[in-house]
Image 1 (spheres, rainbow, N blue to C red):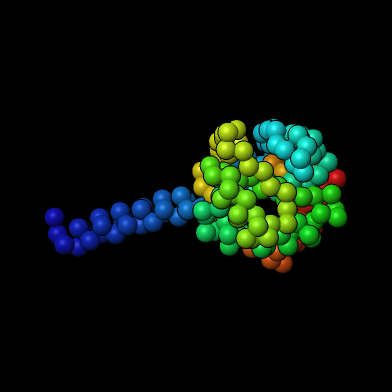
Image 2 (image 1 turned 60 degrees about the vertical axis):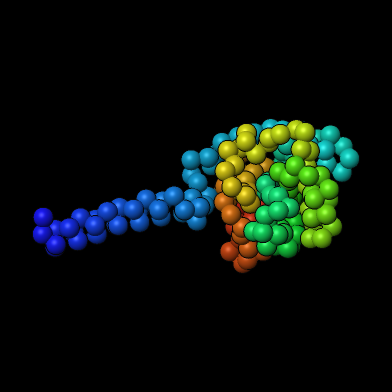
Length: 176
């Protein structure tokens, strides 16, 4: 085999590997169409001291965010989630954080240290809500419309209070 042919073969392999990598990256998978329109998995939580089911929140847009106290990207996006909660709360929408922490004291410390301003839930004994959703990495967020359908899945940390995200929520909240 000539050197030129070997180089061409290696170049073709490199291109194929790059294409596969691009399609596997979380940033490519943002807003996966495959789950859009699927009914959100129902689960029980305790919110503000009361037992609640996700289905009880129908009529609201719910930003369901899976996170953990030991996750640096989760820490990074928390202030933006706090801002988003303030932005959407008066429009019949909410952020609901679900911690996958096994250590309840670490969960509580995170809430205090990060000044979390949205409703959160953690119950290490009741595993695993995130498995029912197919969550593979955190943070991972499901935007659920007023009818209980998944509008969008977002993988990785986001700037939830960016002009683009706020415009997205304005459009979603304008739908009936």
